[in-house]
Structures are given as structure tokens and as C-alpha cells.
Length: 196
Image (cartoon, rainbow, N blue to C red; front, top):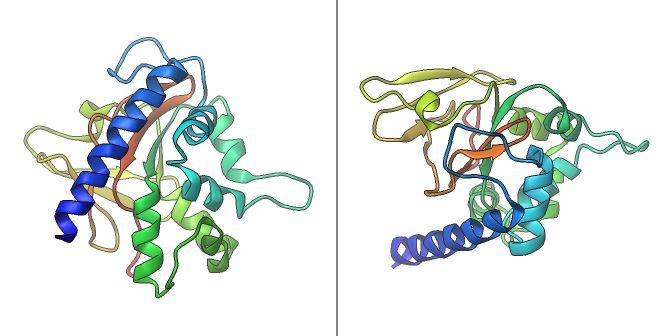
């Protein structure tokens, strides 16, 4: 029953995000002309329309200092070309429940502390514009170095393994979202660089 409900919610979320991304004017087809919006603008736009990145944006918000500076926002709005693996709300909810939180919420992520939140968020970003053909090799596993805390392993069957040994799936068709400063792939699990 759980898998059926989870898969149905994932399909619904994917359909909703697809529609929202079409409205934001960013191509999802892959390599080509970059979109007009940067990575953060896309996340904010999708969240405004669907609420799907509420937990991700909440985690990023944990890192804003008293002066309003935020290292993740600065990174993902800058000129460097980056690839973000963006976890869905359900991915964060599942992580919070695994950590023992009874009622998940975006604000709970901040309780983990800024250093841990930064390490986990940085583990979702890699250098370069990596479309799916650069993330996944058709014949062999591929190691991808992340900006913070190590690397992930992608496999020919389109899954990713993180440092905690979790199997991560990309959420089709929400791959290759072409931002002005990089690429976004939506994933179904919060990737961890270590076993919690």
C-alpha cells in the first residue's frame, strides 16, 4: 500500500512540476540554450506555483545570517555553471521521519545546525552543466565529485548511490531543467554524504 501511494504522489508531483516549469519558461529537454532564470529563481518559481520545494528552500533559509547573507543562495545565483540535484518535499519528509521527527515540517531541518545543513545541501551540487548524459554513463558506473563532502555514484540504470548507501532516483521527466547558470535534476531522496 505504501509503495502504491508513494508512487502515485510522485507521479502527481512530477506532473504538477512539469506544468509549473513550462510556465516558468525553462526548457526541460536538455542541452541547448540555457533558460532565462537562474537555479534559485527556478526553485522559487516552482515553489510559488506548486509548493514542491518548500522543504528545500526552508533548508537553504537555515543558512541566512543576520545581515541576510546566504552562502547557498550566493552560490546558486552566481555566474559559475553548476548542477543541482533538488530533493522533493517528500524526500525531506522521509528524512525527517527517519531521524525521529513525528511531524515533518520545513522548519525542522534548521534544528540540525548550520554546519550539517550546509554539508548536506552542498552535497547536492556539482560543478558544470551536467545534463543526464553527463550524469549517467550507458555502460558503467560513474563517480561524480560534489562541491561538499565527497562524491556520488551514478549507474547505467539511472539511479544514484550516495555516501550513506541510499539509492536515489531522478524524478522523470524532471531532469535536465536548463537554468541560466546550470542544470537541475529533481531527485526523490535527500542525498547524504555519510550514514546518519
